Length: 377
View (cartoon, rainbow, N blue to C red):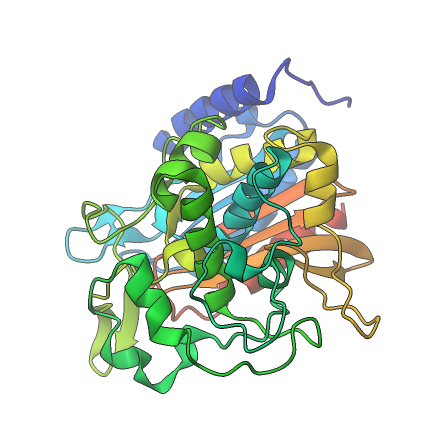
């Protein structure tokens, strides 16, 4: 049966989410899915298979996850499992924003590409042209090196002293001062080494070039244009959210201790919903927000000076899964874990956001399992 296409992605999402929300409210405790919200018998069967699998991983009354699957602009599956707050038993809902950690990086990379399209920066610019006092140790560290984790700059979250400062609120300059004098691991472009420092610096460059805060730039230039109304870059001043992060302690499930969201910054401070992530995926698929060539450049496997490849583009890991090409990125940030998984050729997107870090299967594994169900049908 031919699938119905709606005239616009925003209309599609709005209608699909409304129908599914109505169906969710009508479900009993067994989690049965109302079949008439699906376009075909196939999507109905897929949804039940996914739901049956996920129901094994999450327990009632415990922290859980929100999940969404879309393909070619159609929402195939959307559901939440578990609770947002283990004390009040407020249930998780797909529209609730959760912390996503390093999923933030693809958004920061897009912000850099926006500035490049506007002619305000070049990917070949060196750090020193925007952050004059940053030491480059006689090397030439470019914005592209930062985007691709080939700068050689050490990861500040892995420095021994980081544990003693993560509860303290810091400004951007003080945070950079925390790691800037650490010697490089290698010459820029020599190899790949994942480092949150790279994307923290990209956030600082966005602020220097735009003249506004990173948080404001992301709201004005990315989140608002894409109608991602549940998305924000958290700061120390952000209000307490409904969804709380949990980990497993000696005596059971516990809230994750406080730490300042001023540290993750452009490397990992985004809070969003799975609904908004579909809007983001639609922008990528349809080539909106950025020019098509910019999206394509972000998705290109970066080449090292030696000619080898990194398996990373701008904010995405690039690999093959089940014979298909994928763009993916996960995130782990104290009590929360997340995964986004894109199959460009199949126009398939899966997002899993969890408010805990102790489930049997991590969100990236769950996302892969969901994708396998879809692709084999």
